[in-house]
Length: 137
Image 1 (cartoon, helix red, strand yellow):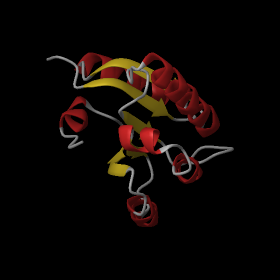
Image 2: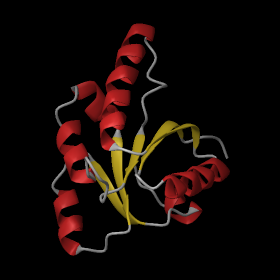
Image 3: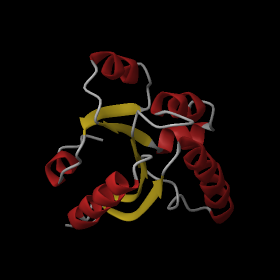
Image 4: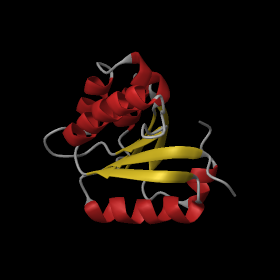
């Protein structure tokens, strides 16, 4: 199976979750590149810089097509990331689709996530090959 997405991003403060999810994505071969961040602020900065490089090079390959985003993180939680994300350029917002990947089973979190137009799916941890195959993005 060839890659479905050129690049994906994982944002989770738990490095072990990031590592496990990265291995699952690698073994599923749905993406050529996987960028991991342990915080929302660094991910926002990465997206801004990746866009500058993409525009200069005329190549969107550094920009992730899917962002797997955890909700419960210190400093900037997933919803604060989404608020910042909405202030990014239209180019970034249309290129990147967000999948909430969380251990939260709180129905309020699910409802809140659905209010963001860029959130396309809501998955519970752990990420699996089956949940990756079922993505309808």
